[in-house]
Length: 325
Picture (cartoon, rainbow, N blue to C red):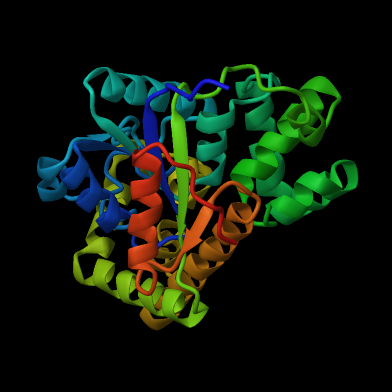
């Protein structure tokens, strides 16, 4: 069998606060790479501190792609991401550089690496109807409705994940078929035309990950996260929005909790605890998704740096390493 001659890319995957950004920057500088963000919060302008968006200094060090593409009140889908990221990867490869895909949004990775199934497109009227139902009945009730028609999808979606509950019910109501049924079909777009090394960065000790999450949340507060949220609330498009917390951008962890705190719903201490807890829950969901990526290699970035470097070197030299689970 002839050798695979496709260009290469590296995917640095992992839960939030696992060290993906720092390693992506380091490897991009060392190996002539450019970073493609795979993070659903980083596509939005004005969400900088709370999303841990790369700083201007970091962007000056290494070119970054798929950042700041939408305002927080504007829609952006996994299909939009797949198209934008694919163009970025193709452009990077055309310049003879190394694409480094870095982030923790599983749906975005799946859309980019495997394509999306040909399910119904978003329908503004149906979404408005579902949002109205949620205001009247609650997203937990709609989640129960989803569980009745599509238990498989409901098991993957948290009862407070309004965006995915809405999408699953939207698909079912428009087509009469569950989103799980649609996803079982072959993807409508070809896979990304590169060979991808999937590396998962995940501390073996979950208490260490929790410590890193707590530290980063406190650092964001020190950097002015609350002022960032106050500025968002003062934006006319968000100030006048009937249900701003239903917007995907503001459902990002930290932002929802900060918004509710500024509405007077929690004390400062309660807000901080809720923000840390929500981030830990996000990390748990990310790890659950990553365990389904059977061709990914897992490393503790603090304890297995030599092994991590060896896996990268083997791949970049054209040798396939043994998968570690």
